[in-house]
Amino acid sequence: MKTFRLALLLFPVIAFGQQSTTFQLRGLPTEVSGATVQPAVGPNGSVVINGGGSANFVAVSLPAPGTTPGVYFMNCCAGTNNAFMKFNSSLGSIFDGTQGQISFTLTSRYSFAQRQALTSFRYAFDVQDTPGAHQFGLLTTASGGRLLFTYWINPTTAGHYYVPIGQEDAVFGAGVSANVVLTWSGTSFTFKLNSVVVSSAYTPRTFAWGSGSAFLIGAQLYQGNGYNSSDDTISEFSVIGPSATVVTPTLPAFTSPATANMIGGSTGSFTVTATGTPAPVMSISGSLPAGVSFDPVSCNLSGVPSVVGTFPVTFTATNSAGVASQSFTLTVTPPTTASFSCTVVYDSKLATLSITYCAASGLIPASAFSSLSLVIQLPGTAAQWQIDARKYMAAMGSYP
Image (cartoon, rainbow, N blue to C red):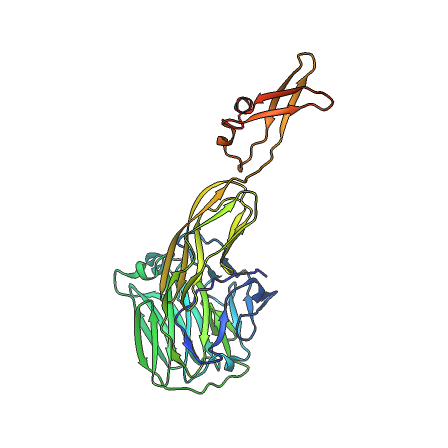
């Protein structure tokens, strides 16, 4: 069984007092134990892998520019050689038919032209209280030359959103993330795709949860198995419970300084902070010095740098309201003291010393040797030799 991580990408929230979130799969390592999925909030589920199927996960620590951490499943579209996540116990504690909200993000792995060549649609998720009764769900497909998002309101009604012609790749092209929010109340059901909002009538429902009920992430439930697996990346999936009042999201804003300093060879630490509702997820792009890493969960930049210099990176904070970026510079200065080893050869006939090699160190800049002399005291003698270290090091190719 493969392990995975899902990035924490949160979207518009609904507050319910003491217990607002009824399900939240954050994808931390502690949420997975063997074949069991243990979400941060909600009942346990399982990762189902059939035949040669696979669950594939984008790294959460240092995603490449333009990528969104998350999970995608292979292969679409039959019920064999595929994979998905399944939850089928205590679903009544997750979904309420009166009011609620589902939020997640999809990152496309196809251009619109590539999606038009696909043979079937992809399910992001499917909720059924009885087999065939699709209470909630969403799929994507290209149909009739249009990019289409289809979402379920109840077993008999589906809503459809066609992306405007010419905007397909901008909205959901290869590597592009689309924020999805489904909200239902006593009178209406709202589908939100990024800034587009589509509303329709909704009648509160009473669910009939039982042994045939299932909540699938990344596939459709059919004949007890998952079909039409999503090979688009699915990130943070959250469900909000009943009796809700909508909380307006706010854009992320960085509150930590845009610079930090560390000393080469010594342990350093810096915490990146940002405000925003809901709490934003952090990511980084750019190259850090060897020995230093960024943890997006604790938002801590830490380590023992093994080189000195100036290292510009970019931090990104993301939530449902949008994205904020901060240009950040980490400066690593040389230590006040440092040691390095040299090989010195003594010629007893000529009574001379020569340096044959000095191990270079990224912590000691070449400028430190501009006026450096090396004094060598031989054991048991009173003689000393003072050597131009810069000359010898230049000869050995270690320092100018």
